[in-house]
Image (tube, rainbow, N blue to C red; front, side, top):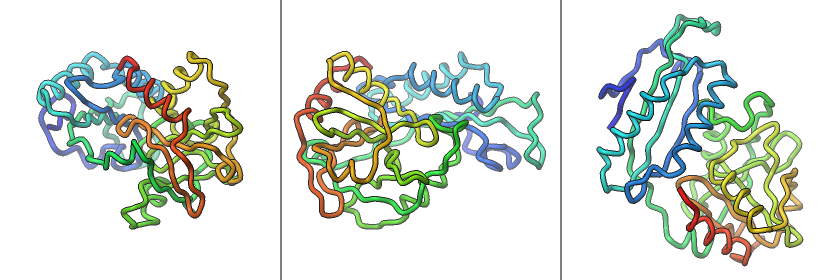
Length: 272
């Protein structure tokens, strides 16, 4: 099901700035057992992104109505709800009139089917050659321009490799092509800083809260390639996959360690 500005539709205007310039934001929400998981957190991040980009989006009530309609259509079927907000339709050129009306798109999709061993035994990952673009203003938000991720993900076709880790211009590892990264190093849980690049993921934020509430030693800092090599445990996460341990990168193997298993268990019990 696809709703465009609240109406059943499968097309947008050619002049929409989301299409023309990637001028907008999106959210990807897991829908399981009749629940749109972490819905409020997704909406809050979406609104923060609109504020950062100066998109005049005020119809949160209509968006919530769209999500309810999509959820009712999914009923008891698990799926993915995707929200896209663009600045709206405008004339050619980068300047955007301040009186544009934002475009609101909400759609449902099948829940991806991944091997269960990804969660239990871990995945094979790789280092990507394509680097993330640094931009302090855009760091953290889920804007529509995903060319860095598209180019990085298309570096490999081997189906046994489930994710690629992306670095910034300084060579520090920031995130996966579709996920956030956590590292256990010297028995401390760490995740990369997102001050210049990367997406501030919903599950990333939830795991930070869980770790701090549980009393785990935790730090956000730059993560180098050598940190990855020396890590005791590695895992990636997002709203759809939850937590996937990394068991192999190149020739370096990692166990599905106790901190990863603890966080998998705590996240599964976390309110959604």
